[in-house]
Image (tube, rainbow, N blue to C red):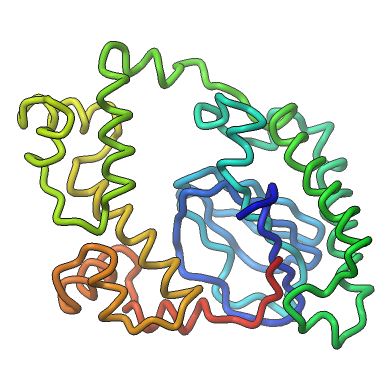
Length: 280
């Protein structure tokens, strides 16, 4: 993802993804509402002209079947881009409640993006890049403005700073998370990662759970499933290959773990997510 965001334009009926999560921040703007949604366990109704911010790792679900034609955009924010622009972005939480007077500004930028797409020739809409190069200048400008709004108005470091919360453990905890994220497809064990960090197995297990909020095996499984979901959606790899390439021992174990989390099989998930979208 080279630019500030990956842009997904939605202009047809499609079943929304099952409840899911990912590491990227996401902005959803719905021209047409009319369906229920869930964000971090809280249910609400999506109306017309709604914008929804989804924090990294937040579980979300935007209705299984929208009523009528679904129109809007999804912006998947590039974390490397945001970290370059705002080095402490990983410590920030997003919420529209932080600046309610700026919500209409954010919606305005999203509307402009969608209107540019809607005004494209129908044949061009179906192409990989529906815009002329000169139009991309405006699109990149709007995306930069949206990211600016997010950092300046809709993000805030919460009272309990994550770095302070980690205290003296910050360095090896960060090293452990980075190591797991880089090597999730390998045969990682609690002992091997603890050895990598120079920490005893017992101390690693206890402190990792306390600071990260989940046990080592749970975190590793979450990272593996996250990558598996991306491969199911954006590649045509066989499910068995995806299982092996994301660190699972075999198809049976992958299917079992996947269904425990998403309540559907990987193939059902792929079918639900494989929709006709134009992606920049």
